[in-house]
Length: 225
Image (tube, rainbow, N blue to C red; front, side):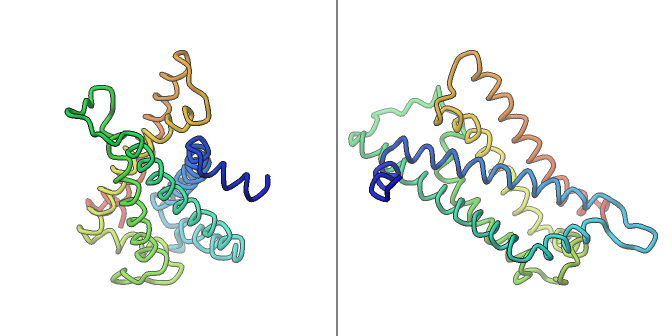
């Protein structure tokens, strides 16, 4: 595809929806993998006091250039996802210059009505999360490659845990709407399949939210220490 054709495709609403779908798949895959890795926090230390999640952190660190490529792809996906969502919203508003006298939300969900706001907020949280657990700039007692220590000591701060839990709840509502609307964007929309797709979206969102918030909650109540 030439650059001019690619630019026209990106400018068209269908092109933007495809971009939203592709970047959404990349980000969904990441949050699933990220959660599976983080759930190793529940594996107790071995006889030598060594934690499995610390091995996981060292493994990621030794990926070197591959890890940085993955980070750049994720960063680009987040930026493209948020920017494209804003562009689609602006295009939709421009196509309806006269606002509704009374907006009917009967056929929309809370998740769909807040997508335009939850995306940028989640993006801001990702920056904070990286500064907290990856770089340690906003962590009170950060130790390089001591993942178990960093997670436990970080989430012992009630404010940090609250911010994380709220962000995960927002991520859940964003994912629920985003997952099933992604299938619609690429043309997979049929009365026979839509209920199953929505059920999958609900289960996936619930798994991600409950799995993620279980970590700070378990730390705050002393199940993980």
